Length: 500
Ligand code: ATP
Image (cartoon, rainbow, N blue to C red; front, top):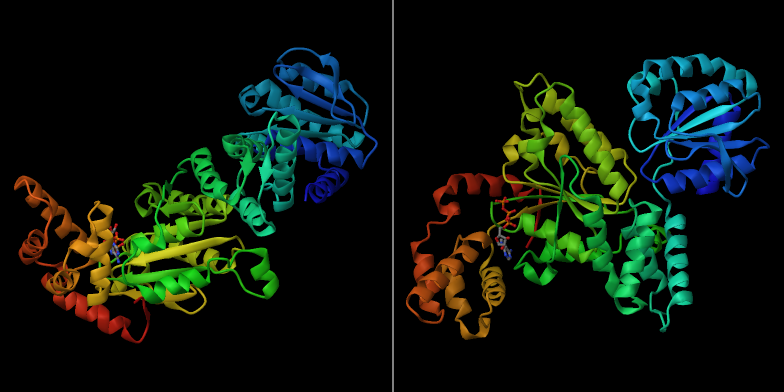
């Protein structure tokens, strides 16, 4: 809570830390916390920015006339040196001024003076201060807005719009929907929460549960792609997956697992699944469906981007990616082909233990983090997987995704025909499903795509024989690498739960 943070900040100042740095993109929220911290003490507050100079601020946050005008940081530090009050100074965007050696020296000289007077400078920056200045300061992390803060902004935005609108503004949001909205908007600044909610209301002068996908989308675009995390747009439903009955019902049961009600009921939030299996059978599709069905953004951890050419950078890159996922939570974090990212962690690696260390970082994070993050890890090759990954407790379940059974193939055929505006009831699905034995879902889809081209070139509508003929031409991967698939199946038999 903001007041809790204000108390912490106050404690930090009172315990003699005269240089404090707050690094945040949410300047407004940081200012509120500072103002709340000030009310706990009888000290003066000054605020400096390049554009507005140094101004004394009253307890409501209203600034007076500039005490020091202009953009010069040195003049302000000089004033602070001379001012004998036990004041608190908020200095905004100081990072660029640290390039001036004179300014940095002044700051070093000021440190002990401030200490003696019980005065504090708080640096408020969107970017990190350079290392040499940062080392002089104590960092104060304001974290991300709490659920209570977000809930308040949603309410205030709704009330403000209702007050000012010429027409009736409605809300049909239940307590449960509201909670999901709050969860969805975590990771955004309060200002962005206000903007996104206002846009959702102005759209139809109502706030309803139908706004949820819109909020997810807005969050996606606001946060954009971040380093090795790729943000994926998803628009799928469970009905887009053929077969995989067990996996689908498992996921359906865990749908509300992050809600407050589930927690009150005594349910531990779900942590994630590992899906192992034959390529092209719908593992990636499942990751997308979970995100869309649970109304969460989908972040894909890209192992390629993770590995950097400089030693040490890869690990910090991974840590940064995990921190970013935490800040955006609730999210679905998809680690595609996990064996590729951490392959050499399983045996003697030739990378000086890098992948082993990276893997260790990931495992301990998976064990320790307490954020609403659902991990979907997919893998095609188990021999490359370090055994620790399979240990109970890492993932809630390990599923084996096999080639689709005959009934599942019928469903997959139906799904892909429908996706291409064809009525599945006009096709002999049982015969087609028999013909494509050993096909993966992706290969079934490909047969339909090729059949469409064939029919189009003949100026005919798509019919069974086009699809049958394409299927006959296909040599499925499972046949080409039959041994590999057989050994994968044998391995998974007593270690994994069947997805179908
Ligand atoms: P890989 O390991 O090669 O990434 P994968 O198991 O993740 O494969 P997907 O990428 O999900 O497989 O499958 C590719 C495409 O094949 C999907 O986008 C989908 O169109 C189709 N497909 C695969 N399996 C199914 C299925 N069970 N139901 C419907 N479509 C499927």
